[in-house]
Image 1: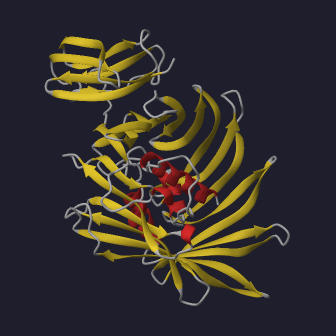
Image 2: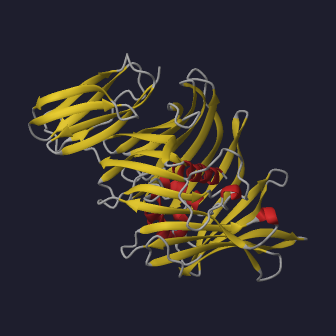
Length: 497
C-alpha cells in the first residue's frame, strides 16, 4: 500500500538522518520489519501542521543541522549532513550534503521542499541533485478533510519525474483516507495505469474487544471482488487513542534518536489469510512484545525491551528476530539504545548485539550528540562492549523564529538562515538585535580561520541584513557567527561554484 511506502520513506529519513554506517555496501542482515501502525502514522503526519512536522517535542527550539561524522584515529571527520531552513516556524527546505572522500568539501546531494497552505502541508518535493542540477525527483500532494473538528488527509498522491524542471510530473499512486467522527476508519490504495486509476487494495480499522483491528483486502480484477490479505491487531489501543498516539510519536521522529521510536510503538500481532478450499482463516505470522528490562546502560534508571518475533509454523511457537532495549533516566528521557539480532551468517538463532548508541543533551534538554557503536544494519561492524564510538551525529539547534512585523522590534538577538543557501557567489544574512549593542558577524572556514568580518559596529535594535560576497573563496561550507550582548549564534552556509 502507498501509505506503507510513505512509512518506509519516513523511516529511511529517520535512519539516514541519524544512523551511522561505516560503508555504503548493502545491508548484510534482514531489513527491520516495518511496524504496520506506522503507515497510518505517516499518513497522519501529512496533517500535523507546522508545529509538529518533523519537530522536536520541545516546541521552543528547532533542529537546524544534523552532521554525521566518522572517527579516524583521534579525530572526528564529517561525511554527511542535513541543513534545515525555516520560515514562520515551518520547515520549508532541507538540503542534504555528502563528501566524496573523508575530509573533502561538501557536495549537494538532495533537496526537499515543503509547501504549506493554512498551516497544512500540501506539497513535499524531493529532488536528487548531481553537479548542482536536479536529475530526478518525486513529490507528494495532500488534500484534506475535516471531521468532528479534526483535520486529516483525504487524498495523498505520489508523483515522480526524471530530469530537471522542464520534465512533467507523472502519477504513480494515491491513497484515499476514509474518516468518521474524527477517526480514520479505512482507506483505499490505487495505482496509475496509463490514463486512469486502478484499485489495488483497501484497509479498514475497527475496535474489537478493546483492540484496534486493521484488515487489508486485495482487489481481484478477474472476479471483481475483494479478497482477504492481511490483518493486524494492536493491543489495548482504540481508534480514538490513535491520533494522540501519533502525536507523541511524530514529536520524536527527527531529533536524532534513530531506533528509539521502536520503544514507543504499540504491540501488535500480524496475521495472513490462508485459503482452505472455499473457506479460509487468519494465521498468526509475526508479533511485537514490549516488557521492562533490567539491562541499564548509559546512566539509565529504567529500560524497556521491544521484541519482534516470527511464527515457526508450529502453533504457539515463536522465534525472536530482534530486540531493542532503550534506557531512560528519572525524567523519562532516553539515555541510549542497544539493538540485538540473530546472526544469520553463522546460521545461528542466538541474539547478538549489533548496534548501540548513547544520547547526550545540553542544558535545554536538547539532544546534541548521538554516539554510535557498531552499525545497526551491518554485522561486519557489529558493536562490542567497551569499544570506542566509531561514529556520531552532531545536532545544532536554535530557538523557534517568530514572525516580526515591519513596525516591531526583534524579541532577542538572532542569526537567521541565509538566502540563498547554497549560494554562488553571494548570499544575504538576516539578523535581529533586541537592543542597541556592539555586534560582530564573522565568517570562518571549517579549519576555524576567519575569512571575512561582515559586521563590527554598534547596531540599533531591530531587523538587519548583511551581504556575504565569497567571490574570492573556494567552494565549501563556512560558519557565520554572530556575537552581541553576550549572545553567540552560528549558522552554516555552503558556497558551490
